[in-house]
Image 1 (cartoon, helix red, strand yellow):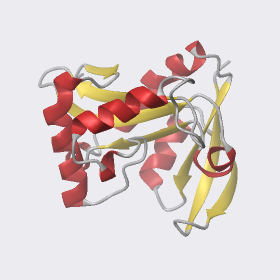
Image 2 (cartoon, helix red, strand yellow):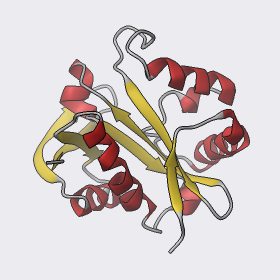
Image 3 (spheres, helix red, strand yellow):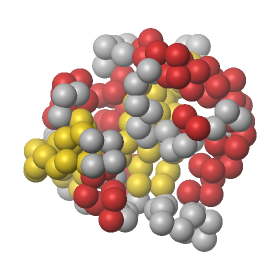
Amino acid sequence: MEKLILITPTEKYCDEIISYREEFLREGGSMDGCGSLRRMENPYDWLKQVESFSKPETVPENFVVSTQFIYVRESDNRIVGMIQVRHYFNEFLEKYAGNIGYCVRPSERRKGYAKRMLRDCLPYCRKIGLSKVLISCIDSNEASRRTILSNGGVYESTVFEPKESVNLERYWIDLK
């Protein structure tokens, strides 16, 4: 089995961050769990934003402290996915998004990476004091639903998110 590591992004991965972003822009798909990467051409700007979100004293108003991870295949240093952990909720996160957002690079899908990435992230959630995490997915995203369920997700409800005009299924994972 391939060795994958969950790490915080650094300047060392700037070329990979650019490649990851460009693939999503070319192939399409949501970039959940990447913060503002879709809108940021310069990876250094994105890394600065990631850093600012990581501390209570620098997180922008109306946002929450979050930790950004990249999921790297060790054999070739390729970013196969990204996952973001939000340490607590604001109104939007509590109702729609949850504690965790993630995505897998389009060319790396259907290899089980999302399931492994979420599993590898849960110990960190425990470490920062979360006893359970909320994760949501679009109701038509069967792959994400399976990823959440395979990691112990328990369905709570479906809500309509008006800005994107989508139905989101909400799942809780107990970390106790």
